[in-house]
Length: 209
Image (cartoon, rainbow, N blue to C red; front, top):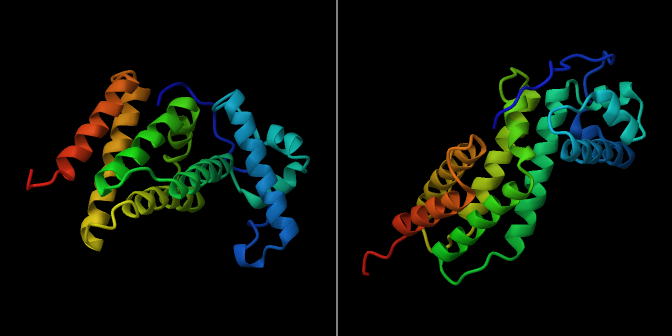
């Protein structure tokens, strides 16, 4: 994850805080989703160089409305990243391939690598958001991590609950490290795949041979 990013738009014209989630109407949820989808579309074209005003235009919303739902650009980017992750986690969970815990975990890890390789700008979103002290940003990034760990954990029903959670957490940390090494140009994508394969085989190897 590298590259220069523009100065953050950390404040906006809206004075009111975002609506409380439990109070959202269907119309508000649809509007919020439209804003996030517009952000993802724009980021795919110009990672890191998207302004809130552009999002508003693409989402067919007023700029005040965008700021009402997301108080800063960083909060919007973090939610866009979470949405992207959640979409992939849901798709992967439906068809985890393999007849063993190790095979299923390895399959999902490799598919996750492939997803980031296809859209490397998603890694940049983390760098663009994680250094802020915004609680909304922290909440979205935390949810993206929890979602990945839960996905990996659920591929290992043969492990104890605590063991599966520990392995899933370490798997995420290993994946995160490897992808960032790739983004920095220190690993090739095939080396990321090899590292993950070795991690799974060492961690979930059968001691009986």
